Length: 77
Image 1 (tube, rainbow, N blue to C red):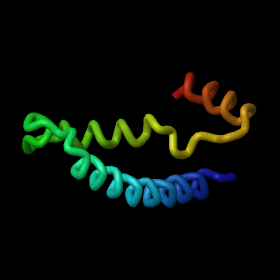
Image 2: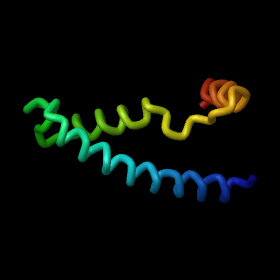
Image 3: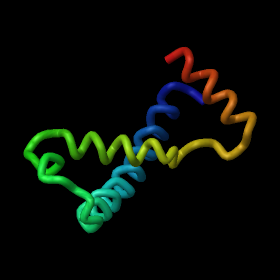
Image 4: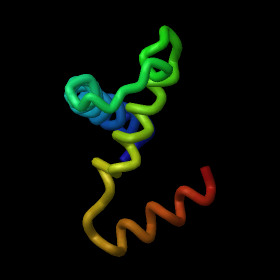
């Protein structure tokens, strides 16, 4: 796969993540778990929600070999 195709696919997946993140925002707002500090007009809550979403590893490869390859790649970037 060439560089252009990789970037295109990453952008496509980020669009999917954006839709999922919108649902994550809705869930957080409905949860009753937000503090007043979290709701302040800054980037604290958005950073938290993005981190929570990606900590769930929504795009993690299911195959063990691919996970090993991904973990190895992560050491270099």
